Length: 212
Image (cartoon, rainbow, N blue to C red; front, side, top):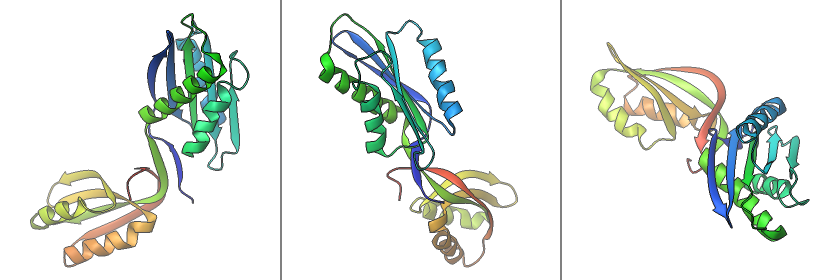
């Protein structure tokens, strides 16, 4: 299992260039069918738009790559959009840039810049994340230990997914597979072995790009 970049959520952002309104839409997808369904939903919502150009990649190795200028001059929309996906190294995602023509021609260079920008702001809005092989750890400590554990966790490469206060404090952590041994050893050391840790199956977990 190898880490890869994708999008954290569906989102959109827009701007105006020489009276033309551009709306960038981005969505994480797992299959080409999902990418096409997202594209169709944008087309329905913006059926009165002048263009709905798109680019998408499917597969952790970008095995499927598709793009379209949707009536714009050849090479001014779909390909520049795909170039942004490649440069950002984002997989399993679909981006659609909607244009409402404002009456002023942008020229080939202006169109390339506009569709590049529309793709970039859509990706920013959808938040690029890294999918990494990770494990959930179900942990339990006694109440007197919790403040110390909670403070320690703030500086660790983990995500605290849930916390429950019953007869003891039960909390669930997400930890990258590569960090698991170090985190478990740290918890055991911090609590003098007075912690119960139940590892669950390895799965894909989203992490912020700047998390390490």
